[in-house]
Amino acid sequence: MNAIVALCHFCELHGPRTLFCTEALHSPLPQGAGCGDSFGQGEAAEEEEVGIQMSSRIRSHSPAEGASAESNSPRLKKSDMCEGCRSLAAGHPGYISHDKETSIKYVSHQHPNHPQLFSIVRQACVRSLSCEVCPGREGPIFFGDEQHGFVFSHTFFIKDSLARGFQRWYSIIVIMMDRIYLINSWPFLLAKIRGIIDELQGKAFKVFDAEQFGCPQRPLRINTAFTPYLHKRNGNAARSLTSLTNDDNLWACLHTSFAWLLKACGCRLTEKLLEGAPTEDTLVQMEKQADLEEECAAWEGQDGEEGSLRPQPNVLEVRSNETSKLLECRLPVVFRSLRHMRQVLGAAYFRVLAWHILMGNQVIWKGQDRDLIQSAFDVLRTMLPVGCVRVIPYSEIYEDAYRCNFLGLSPQAEIPPHVQTSEFTVMVDVRSAPRSNLYPVLYAGDEPLSRYDFVVSSGSPVATDRVGLTILNKIEAALNNENLSVDVVDQCLVCLKEEWMNKVKVLFKFTKVDSRPKEDTQKLLGILGASEEDNIKLLKFWMTGLSKTYKSHLMSSVRSPAVSECRN
Image (cartoon, rainbow, N blue to C red; front, side, top):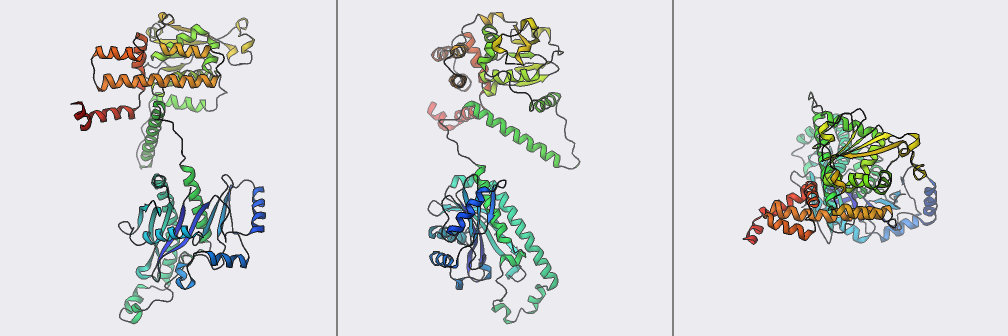
């Protein structure tokens, strides 16, 4: 992440001061951060290390290099600094960490060496400890502009028995030029920086408590209230943060924390190039992920309550969870693609199966091999939009069609007679093949398939004669074309689904939102090339797979006053 993390302090003598800052460098180190020969040797030595991806090193340099760096750096004069304003000792080279994965170096100093960065950090420090403060003077706040960068600032107090009010004021700031990225990182930064602050405050409170126990300052100040004590600066008032926390390794620990914060925050959010609006499958997957996260958060909240009894999930959920756990360690996929399944089942059986899938009818696979059934569902579900897929991979009892349109059953499961003869159901019976009826040499290598026969049956024999399902004809044409690889066929399938989902969106807007008459709807279907009965049924079924985001967007646009005025 291209940002700078800094620790700032409000000194009673010198005002806001930057104590410690860490920056990510994608180029060679600046002056003063390392030396020529020794740095190259260290770099080579570090490349030979394995295991730890990120390591901290203190780079030393010669006095001459240190003097030149000090003369060229924009750091403050010693007369403008006290113990409370200083972090690293004079001549300290700073800290550096190497990220081997990205070849990024995280460098920590008291001030940035680059004059422009020094000015930006200095201005952010002053604003974070003066005018840009949240209510209560302790907590997070966001400010900035495009010229000087955007800042996430978290102010806090550190206990000090010798300070005015027994506490000193500090802030941790994160500066970067990308406002959107910084705002999206707010929850992450707040949680991690809050953890760093709690650790600092905990250490300082132990020191403060010990000092107060040994020599209480409050009664001493009361007794000297009318003496020149108040008009004089206490010589020990300016105390360093290492003294307040009694931690000599404080700056090394802060360097490690700040470097990890920059790396983790950079890895947390990634940019993706989206060509056009997100597809309906993407929106549905995002909605399902959000629902899953909310459900997990609800369970965690219930588990945290003492004495609360967690409700038992229904039998279907228990079976699905157990099945998913078993499928995590299953054998390699049996059916590799739709073309492979069509070759195994045969063109006629595959057409019956695909027709029922596209129309939204229930597909039942019955057999002993769970892995084979699961692989079949993984392949067949690619013909449908994500929102139209409801799968129960394997069950010991029959489940109704409203629960799932892909159902795997064990051989012992009983299917109701009305389901077996229903025109809205297709069944694939996976049977053990006799040795005399094994697959030809083409499938000899497919060990799981060579042991089975597949019998496809349905209560709707007319389905094989229907030619009105346009998308099915195009899918079969792509599968028949041997010049198209499997990857190209997959992309063709994605394009076909998007084409018909766009028709579904138009039909949904036309019928559900605008409430047009049937005559206009028939004209629209003719324009869309979907006036046949099978195509109409397919559009109605696929309409159930539209995302909630799209539906709510259409409904809100209809209810908005601007749209109503335009229609009137």
